[in-house]
Length: 422
Image (tube, rainbow, N blue to C red; front, side, top):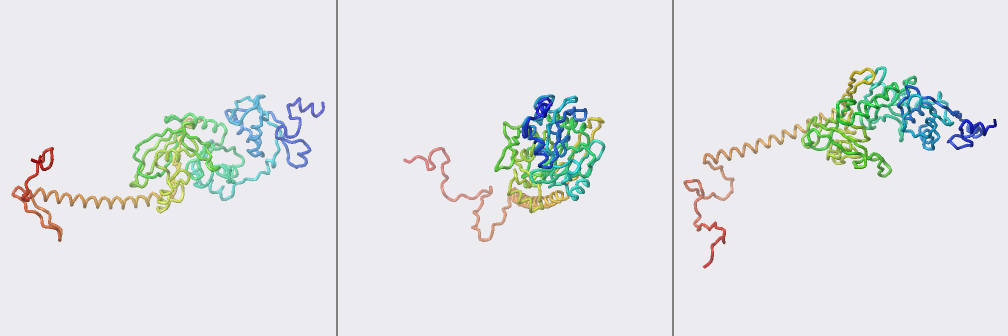
């Protein structure tokens, strides 16, 4: 059988570029290795995973952008049919992977995370067990690389633990600090993702993710659940922007007051019932109380006010997370203390609000005391002294009313003030 016949029999492309791969000549010219056609049977560990995630595991030397391109071109087959990256595989499924060029052999791919980032992330681990890691993610550190960021939390952990299979269970915005869960097993990842998908009604089952957030003004809505769908793929000036839109995906957040700081700001606890991009920030702004330090959806004047209290970042912190471990059937609860820089802002706000309350309170007591003195004096028939230079008072009658001026009393009827003319 010649080469072209073997290609047709094996369902392989007949020429270069047909499936994103290249022929042997071009491969030899580039010097880069190329994978062979593979037919992988899905095992129990990958059951329920997305196709793109499985491909990233099976092709560790291939950039994600190239994997997505293969999927868009329909070169990946699931049980003999074209498939997209969001499809989920089941145990026993057969995944056909076309030939792909490797940018570098898998064993020479160097970690992109710096030694400093690795130390920072390892030092921030709050919980470590055989199934999960919980990291107190620092503000300013991305959860993963991309969009100008060479590496994030997951790259740092993979670099420090190359023998493990580590996956993000959920995400946090780069400027948000707090609890971030990493799965150490693919079966754990699937189970936790199932919990995240189920817990959208506000019930206590599933995940309980809570955030501390400082917002503008005095929150007078009490305990408030905001159900406002979010459109997460809007572009403004080329930048991704999320907004409330009827056509968006369902999103629900539950807000409750923790502490007031006069009329300037309010510290809230937010329970997330869904996990949309920028959800808390957009819902808070939608309620008329944008998040302090939010340069995207916030109030610039309010942000400048808070800078006087030492705020230099977004005031949003994932302070606790709890869920029922689907494998062990036990409740896992983890909390991350509020970062020192945010605690310092609250301390300064408390001092400033306290002084403001004291001034208002003292002024109110003075006004109340003066009013009480005047009222009691009037009841006793004593008239307060006149200011110097003021016109003399009119003499009072025995009943305490001013004496008549001599003018005739005017008619108070409904007609003319002077009565009818004759």
